Length: 153
Image 1 (cartoon, rainbow, N blue to C red):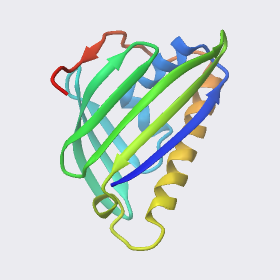
Image 2 (cartoon, one colour):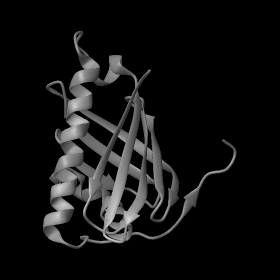
Image 3 (cartoon, rainbow, N blue to C red):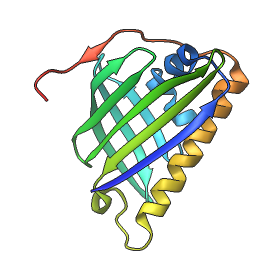
């Protein structure tokens, strides 16, 4: 299992940054290789992405969602991937976003070599594009403010 943790500071209030991140169907606008994300219901997302030249599809389930603090998810079928994003207010108009991903490198990057480096660089670029997207817009494209907490972990 590989784990990647990346942080970025964004010149926007935590509420704005969090609200934008909840707009999952907008992910292809700043995530490299992600072709579409379809929200199936409040807790489930269907992903289509191109990874290593191959198209992959999987469903992910949001396991925890706390407004302005944290969103966590894991894949339900297909490639194993789990992640969490946390939002930390640094100042009224500045937020630190930290993205943590855990995945099976054999499934996600099917070639030998520097698999971790490839995914790590992609995550870094995605966060930079997200920062640019929200800073340039100045406001979120939408919001979903409900809480999800699964019990029994």
